[in-house]
Image (cartoon, rainbow, N blue to C red; front, side):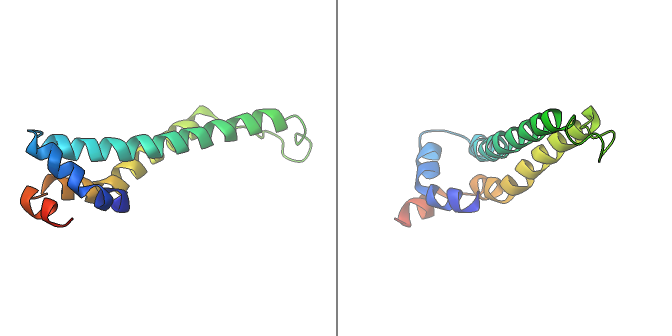
Length: 107
């Protein structure tokens, strides 16, 4: 996320020039981070649940009670959202503090 933000600093500066507020730029960066983490994380959770459902009958004699309860899915979803917030926090604050003139001067 940090690298993605650094590559697009001039774009964020132009958004601010067009009238987007500091908070809206910060929200965009944070939302992107949460969406990227959410897509990968929920895809992984879904595939894990599917794999467990498909293979639970085959491994029942070795691992009785092999399942993924809803609490595990909920915990995984919360960790995914937390990871998205944490990884996007520093770039989002940088977007909040971005100075238009110095950001456009870099390139």
